[in-house]
Length: 85
Image 1 (cartoon, rainbow, N blue to C red):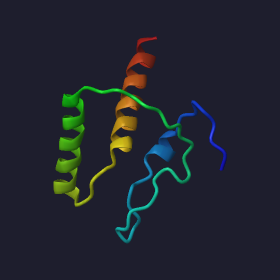
Image 2 (image 1 turned 45 degrees about the horizontal axis):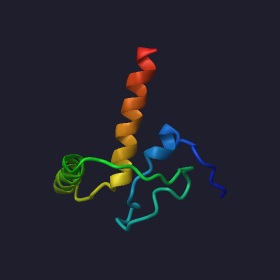
Image 3 (image 1 turned 180 degrees about the vertical axis):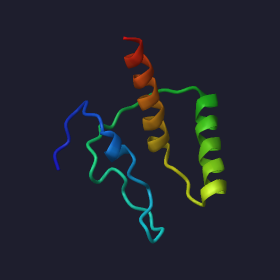
Image 4 (image 1 turned 90 degrees about the vertical axis):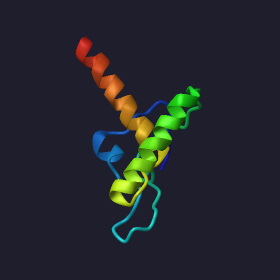
């Protein structure tokens, strides 16, 4: 699969889980078109993401990866600004 810079994943693609049915970790980006970017975030934001990961692991037994959480946050931010028109 060829990757293009700046392509966004669709909602269906971004909801692909990090684990298969048998609980083994799989590459959640295998079928999604994603772009690798470098971002700078505040230390408190990193701690908050790690706390979300820990809480989700406690609740579900599975830890979401940071990329999935950041993608979800970006989707919410994009939606907010899209609605403002």
